[in-house]
Image (cartoon, rainbow, N blue to C red; front, top):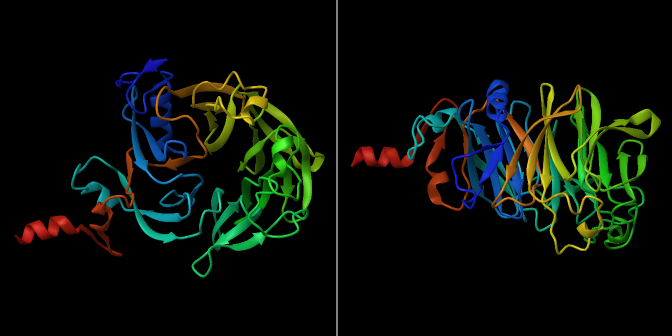
Length: 363
């Protein structure tokens, strides 16, 4: 493993396999991860073919990341709100603190105040944003008229109420609509999943309301890659491919950690592993309890199921929820609303400017 230039005790210190920067450079991409435990979204980019560079930004309990196909529009689910960002290459190029450093800049454009509903997966559909509303046990449509609009709920859930009855957490889209969902159980009472968290997980087809695969260990992150359905089994550390018609799955590889969050580019799948909380009674039940000692990002070669590299965090990052790939972006930036700076970037359909620069030019 190569050690980056930071000391092991520095914030966001990590080590990585020697081939990772070169691979990410060839793939021409940046990774975006959310760590709700640290309150950050982190961009991980190839600095050159030997080193990585990170950019952490503070957000309140960031969870799901939604990206449109080309990656220029992003939505981020946080503690009680969803922020929508749009990339501006022109503002990135002229970013006052570091001009000519960034190749893209995600600027906040709108915000939805959804309330503390514990949103997990978040995705763009053909007609807007869809979210897994875990507290209310439903898939929700996000819009400006309401905190959320229920779109689908499992048939065993009798009412939309804030009780996290089955720990609905994952969602996969097909043809621009939510199609598959994961939950920890089929319970219909408040937090009924806690006693069966390692055994009673399900994968569901939302169109038919049928359970495709029952009794799976803590399913997360259902994703469609190359028109096939994949899934992470967090309790066992397995990355699996679903045989939808047969109601079973094939194990691609076992990553020996609490897997949750994955993204795909070309022949590679980037999978996040979280460090397990030692004082958690839920995590203590897992077979991998003694193995998830560091948060990591594992790179799996999809055709062979072999691990091709990894990034291991030593400080700051313990629990990762989502991971997304920003295509054709080698050094992106993102603005939060914690400072006033984001208000100074003005974007028009055919031009951009930084208000502060303009004001200084007049003086």
